[in-house]
Image (tube, rainbow, N blue to C red):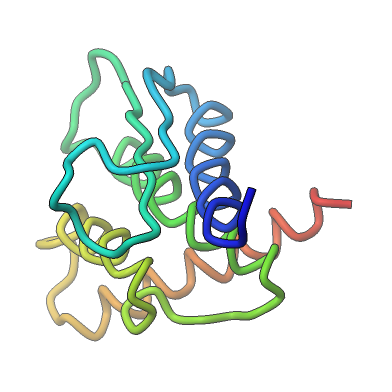
Length: 132
């Protein structure tokens, strides 16, 4: 595997492991895009199936948000760098997806960003601890 493939593998593994541990079925994982004209060169896909759930339930939103953000966090740990998903090209799609999934939960956008950043910090702490 070259560096981009390795980084993508760690990233997608983050989605897979956290999603699975939170009760999802992982339908498919790819280390390339399922859509040919998609985003940056380094790109993978993970199809997470939650089954029949109430998408508006707070716990379900949290499970989805943790799974979405676990990809960048796994890659952060592997890289040894704490980059912000909103500002690092390959992770911007994850950040946008997390923002879209959490829209309307907060009165102000700054609260939403703070919540997502805190979730990233908690995931990082937990995943870094479990890496050992």
